[in-house]
Image (cartoon, rainbow, N blue to C red; front, side, top):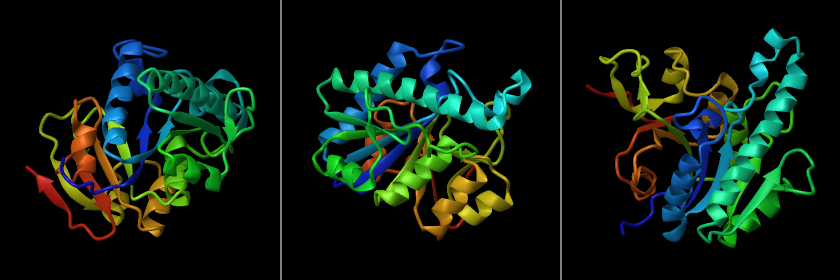
Length: 246
């Protein structure tokens, strides 16, 4: 096994990724697959924090169209992230990997309250730490929550799992001629308005010099290749020159 390039990571997954081929909810095949991929990097010594969105169940941004105010809708979305977090926790623990579910909103019956030092200690003890409920505040996305938690716990990198191979100059699912970037800076992400994460999340990573890798989570062993230094996906940081894979 190659030497690890990243020892502590935060993996961000969208809630929609859990749907699989369904139009709503959670596909057990997907959670089992993700759990298996996380196990591979855990087994080689990577400390893993996980942040999962809630868009497969409820999105706060869509609340207004249903007559629900934004703050209330965002809190509903935070609860959806906890449902997804429990599903992932169950899948990971079924393959004998210890986990801790931590919530930014107090839910003592199912999760520990998020405390930075406690989260770090769990990671040091080899537990997968699942970080639910976003930031615990409305108007902030789970992308921002992932960036915030990654900075707080001293992660080496934030990894965003998607269903495409990295960052492109246009949507590769709509444009077959879209060009993929191998590396790109946060400044260029903002200049080109490439919506890989919301502005707050990108700015937080940029200001704290936290690198990000955007990659295809649906390909087997991609996550393992990434943490051992293979060229997978697109690297986003403050120093990289923009390079396109044409």
